[in-house]
Amino acid sequence: MEKKQQRRRRRRNMTWQIVLILAAGSVFFGVLFGTERLEAGQTEVQETAVSQPETETQETATSQPETEAEKTEAQESTARETETQEAASQEAADSTAGTEAGSAPNSPEGYDYSAPVPESPKTDSTWFDDAVFIGDSRTQGLLEYGGVEDHADFYCKTSLTVYNLFEKPKAFIQDGNEKITLEEALTRHSYKKIYLMIGINEMGTGTQESFFEAYARAVYKIRELQPDAIIFLQGIMRVAEGKNASDPIFNNTNINIRNVMIETLANDRDIFYLDVNEAVCDENGNLHADWTFDQIHLKAKYYQVWKEYLLQHGIVK
Image (cartoon, rainbow, N blue to C red; front, side, top):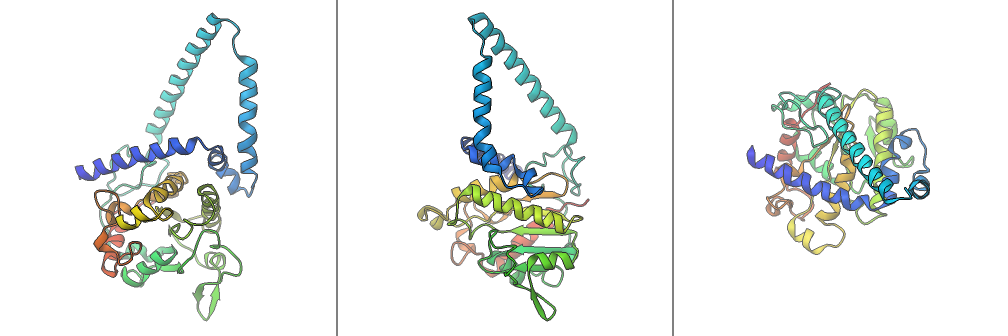
């Protein structure tokens, strides 16, 4: 348990380092702070990201003190204000952690729900009786080899991406005697748990920012169609060491950056982030080399590990 906590701390430190790197990009901030506007259907995120810094710069330029004494006083005042804001933010975070969120069985008191969902007592496969899994070929593997096909529904397809997830012509779900779209399926059926694992196929398409915007839109669309469900956003499963070292696109650095973005969508109430990489990766953060046949997909028997991880990381309202 102590080793797992140490790995989690190292991963979170790495996560924040990546966040600091991403913070240099104004487009990412435009997307990040525009997610609530995305939920309302607004699309002018990048425009806001470009224009806002100019306004702030102009305001700063016109309000700078003219004397050294005034500069010093202003700096000290700013520092005091920053400390006060940080303290207030931390106090608010401490007081709301675990109260606004759904409760994980036997989860640590005061757990930081901005991190991946904590471990909880294991349940059995009936946990998935009111669940649906949405995703690409990796989710398809979970359907075929995970042993939950008799409990959960699966809306998955090889090569599925966030860019075509809700395309109207994309009728890939078998419902009785007809093929229907994801939107039609989520309109017809009701779920309490929705597991989303998608993102590996998008690595070579668009940018990290365009991926995040499309991913966020998909999440909010799912929320709109299934207002009573808990949505579990599963971080993109990493690749094995050989793939990571040799591929300039499909590597774990790029995957980690996108997972940081995905994690920001968790709202600690009905959208939570799960990091299955905790269960399927080695001590260096790569997918276990002997657990995969192509350095990307798990071998059949290791889908059980994925399933067991989900059964030990549950959230109930």
